[in-house]
Amino acid sequence: MRKKNLCLIISFVICLFIAFDIVYALPNSKMKAEDVRYVDSVFRNIQLYKDIEYSDAVNYSGQLEKLLLDVYMPSGDVKKNRPVIIWVHGGYLAEGSKDDQDSFQTIYSKEFAKKGYVTVNINYRLDPNVDKEWNLSMKNAMTDVASAIGWVKSNYFKYGMDKNNIIVAGYSAGAEVVTNLIYGTYVDGWDRSGVSGVVDMSGNRLVWGDALRNTPPCTIIHGTDDTINPFSASEELQGQLNSSDIYCELNAIEGENHFYNLKPDSTSKIENIITKFLYNKVIKNNN
Image (cartoon, rainbow, N blue to C red):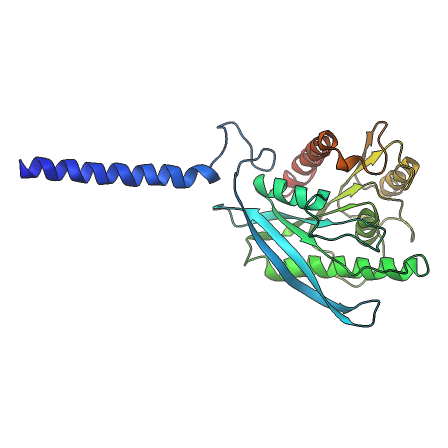
């Protein structure tokens, strides 16, 4: 009798452990058996590492400013060598922040971390007098983004990032910063290795010279009724990249203005465009 009771107790304890494992694993397991990493939201929970200093630089007040970023990653993920997306906010180089919870870069940082990416949301130096010194403002912002790319390469192991698979994405002024940094030479001398893809949302053409050859593929997303950065600017950018034999697709958001990304239905549409581009043109080419 005692032996029977002991077996029942042991069986009960084993069942508890099994149940605990199922409950514990569920938030981080795939939603459906057919879900695909980097395409679907295969993770329910994310981890956030906030306000990490990636560099410092003298700002427009003459003060040494700490440049900060946030890292998002899928919670409970066992994969260690994961592609990275660096998000660069817009704001005319004069405003904007990684801490804006309603911004595209914060929303997408979370959503793409759920897909299995590590995402990095950065701040860069902002210039209150950008109209008087636009070239300097651009150069400083580009330098800061280059520093963020360098930080990823120096800290890839700690956060399970693939230093050879870094995607850089920007919106508006952030997109201009990204494309001119990756494809141009206005800021040169930084380590260009490892950058595998570019996402341009409502940006502008390349300002300083032709696009460098042997640079990564690009997707452009732009509203056709944009009156701030006209759609024609993205058409010109596509031509500049294609003329240097760089793959570049242009996705027209019909009837939308510069702020199409603020609409929930547009946000979902843009996310799908970015997801498809990254999976087909970046992930598959780097695995």
